[in-house]
Image 1: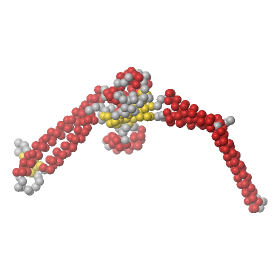
Image 2: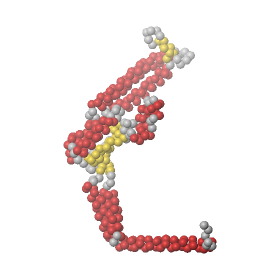
Image 3: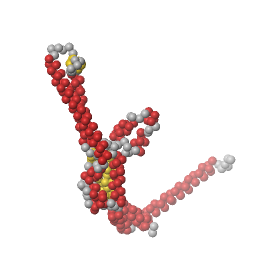
Image 4: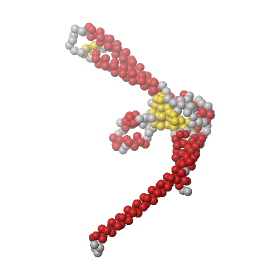
Length: 330
């Protein structure tokens, strides 16, 4: 339906409507600014009250330390080269059960501290300390042995996200206490408690024995090759005038059979065995105990959670807002 108003009247009507909207908006802005000015003026007049509210809030914030004391944390990082993940988790759960049940005397006996000191221990936590490279390396050892059909149904990202304890052998055991000096001297007792399990020690000793046997085998092989090197050196001296090739035929046994020996391969084999012996020697200390200590406990611990200054600040801010609301509501 067409309008009967001329085009000029329609434009004028729109302009009038816009002017009215602008006037209403400007009036609202002026009222808001006036109220804001009045509120700021009232707050400046009541600055002493607001300061009092802030001081009260700060005192209350610091006082919360009496109800929820500040915690201190000290961590030890352990690496196990035997299947001890579940046992370590069970041991930590047992220690936490002693803490929650108030069996401070038994906990003191385990850690080698007094009852008063163990009362200040609030909890013990175990977490994986392995980085992503170490976890991927452990996962690869399992993944490479699976058949292709099973590999298609495995999502690597989900395994790494959901299961943080299977594909690792390095763990962080964190102890929390309200006293930063409790941690001094408890490491020996804690490790002794973890090392007590006979089954783990049998596994450890078996693996240690295997490593030492492998090392002894390589040492014998090197001795045999050293004897062979002496023979080769003698033969090479005797055949110094014959330069037909680097290989020679030597009769090493009573059967009369001859073996073709390359002197360079003998030296390379000795070098290879020496490298393997070095690798085994590096592994031996890892099996001297069930748990290899990567990082020791800090005797004084480190701060964990909110301290007195932060709580005072939060309390002052919260009570300051309450003071502002109270002043403006009058």
